[in-house]
Amino acid sequence: MTGEAHDDHTHRDLRGGGLRAAVFGANDGLVSNVSLVLGTAAAHPGAGFVRLAGLAGLLGGAFSMAAGEFVSMQTQREAFQRELAVEADEIKRRPESERYELQELYVERGIDPDLASQLATELMADPKVALATHAREELGIDPDALGSPMQAAVSSFVTFAVGAFIPLIAFLGGSSSTTTILLAVGLTAIAALIVGGLLSMVTVRSWYFSAIRSLAICALAGGATYGIGAAIGTSVH
Image (tube, rainbow, N blue to C red; front, side, top):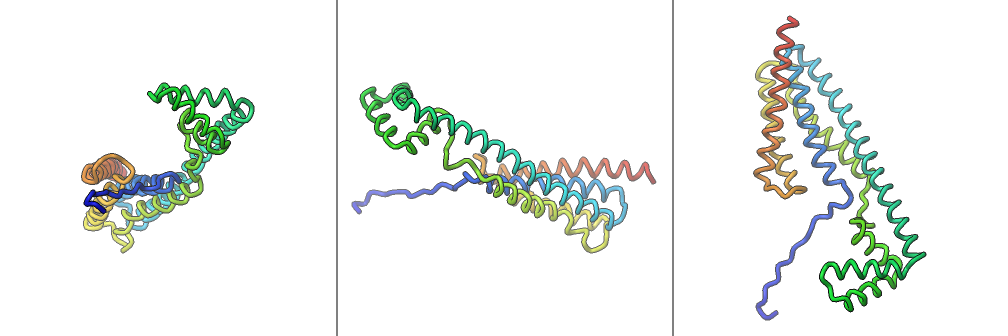
């Protein structure tokens, strides 16, 4: 070494869809179930009823999230695969036309025409490399990063369930008093800050901004449903 500094850096692998589904699953589970639990508890039906409602929300939401992630990612994956098949067929039937198309793409991006021609020729020499290049340059698709529907579904199910369980913890002791409700609010607030910080891993926002935003959303949702639950509970009694 001559004293020249080299900063090594790595990038997270976000291609499978599991990380995104996991983080957003936890956030959705937390927000939806704290709303359900606080709205139910505000009507003072008893801890058993709150637990039942919260558990139903946990299971229903987790299955719904998992199914939604699986169907959406599978549909997207199949659409990408169809486009890749079309492109592969074009490369096989009209290689020179596809080579020229790639060459023109590079020229439009400012590469010298002779160099663009040489580059396109070399890339088209290997069908697999040619397909990957055309997919990225023309379609904006990475053939190696189509995502895993099953991974996304499982991640979403598990983390939604974990997030949805947190507001329920306070009611496991058999009480639905004001202290219990405040404990549920406190646990949810802590979890919201943590989940919000994790959300910054898949966004460009700072962890501080993401954490505060997550807390604010939980507070707004929980506060609104608590008010509705209290109003309905009072009118029923």
